[in-house]
Image (cartoon, rainbow, N blue to C red):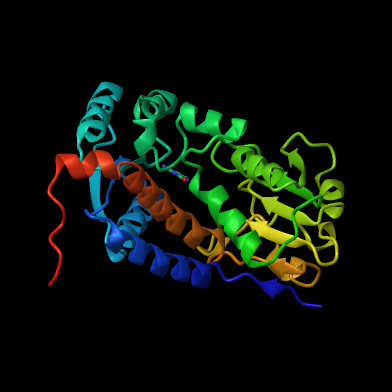
Length: 293
Ligand code: GUN
């Protein structure tokens, strides 16, 4: 049996079309500031893709490029400026940051209402206490892919591979909220293969190329691959050995074209949510966008 391939590219395109309509209904143009410190090639690509995707749905994107040698104080001053700018609804600081800058200092300085990555401790606390707040984009994208696949999560055994603050921990929380029985496994887990074999849902987010093998996947399990690893020949592979797992899984995401496009679409969704939440405050501060006749 061959798995259903979950087409994240198509699902993200549908979500973006819906978001473009929502953006157009706002009485002002939503704005997203993307901050890139240094010139790391992969980060530069991600930042460009995020800004382009925003533009394409009618959200103004500003890309703020700072040199690799930027001090923490200078970056904090930039964050303070963006926090105070009423045109900016969302702020995203691309990670990783250069070693002289503490990421927790920067993330903690972002206005939590503009924290479209959902990384600020206030939003993390809200997520884990079940209160409404901004939720990290990749975990949101994973949940939308699961919903699209029609995965029954209530009571299901779900294993999350990887305990990062960006993906593993928040996705485990969202699965728990959906009434799954969640195992959060990581590099010190004794028998990863056995944990996976018991699972009806596998979320792989460890950053190790093709770690999950075909014989780790139970028949009809749903496999979501968050990994993006570059092979020596330049090609991209996920954390899942796709060619092996596709014969066992019920549904599986490809890399590229699975989770990646969903992450960006969810960033746009968070930006519009942040913009809508600030609507009342803004319509007082600024004139309404002119309407066509
Ligand atoms: N670097 C890798 N993933 C992410 C992400 O989701 N947000 C930000 N800001 N940086 C990242």
